[in-house]
Image (cartoon, rainbow, N blue to C red; front, side):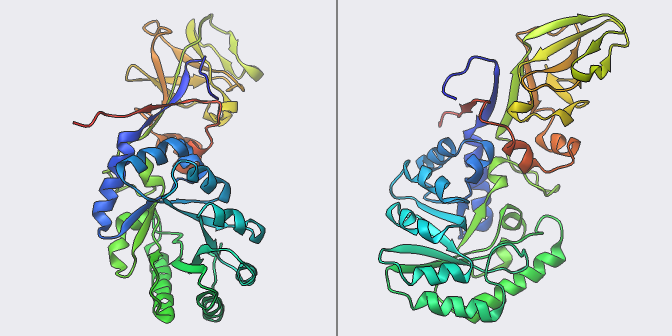
Length: 363
């Protein structure tokens, strides 16, 4: 949406994204951090976030879809872009002409590569226990590897990677996956240009225990979020803001909203906010809090498609900023409220919510 007419928006703190990148880069040095900007940079705006990182000097990025990669290529001709998800063989040409690296994770893809008459860079993905994408058994891994390394030189076997599924919650299973990746790397004994395994959690906690990786992937923690409760150095980057569109006076016993699920226990004031579940702030948020002037105010009544209700007091005016998350009410609190994870909370905010980008001036 190009124009903004309602007072509802997401504030994105670009400077803090750079700070998070720098903090993790220092932790994993000399490995290169690959920012993951899939899913519209986890709801932060892929073009804006990537442009800001490029201006800082970052030149490696990862996404999930070829569509996402092509969108980034329009920003810059020289950055390296890896598609971590599956790419159909019929789309390899599009990847090639846009100089995009694809992931190869099954034999159907391998067979397709042998018939190509154009250059393509590939990373080989191995499954160490996630059981999602990747070659799994020693036999399959070696078969795929031997085919890949013997393809024409136009097909560049550039990287090897895996994905850890429990770095944030189960160290024992993480160790199983890490040890499996160790064994695979030793078995292949190949001079890959890039070897990467860690996501945000394992980058912060365990990357330095893997002495042969060259890169590490930074996803959710680039945006100041984590599933690890003991990580406290990340900077917040996202705040969801609205304002009161209308103030209503309720008399004791009056009801509010669809289904009349809220009844005023006394004479009350309510504020109507111009944001609803079509913006990704879903109905299950009823009963939670918002922040106004550093104080909590309750969400009452059912959240509508385009509006919602909060109980306020006479100190509140329409000029006051209402922060739904990213301040006193953290994104993690909203995730706990909805029995989910912080990833889902920021990714579900829809295109209807415009973004305003904040950046501190360099001194």
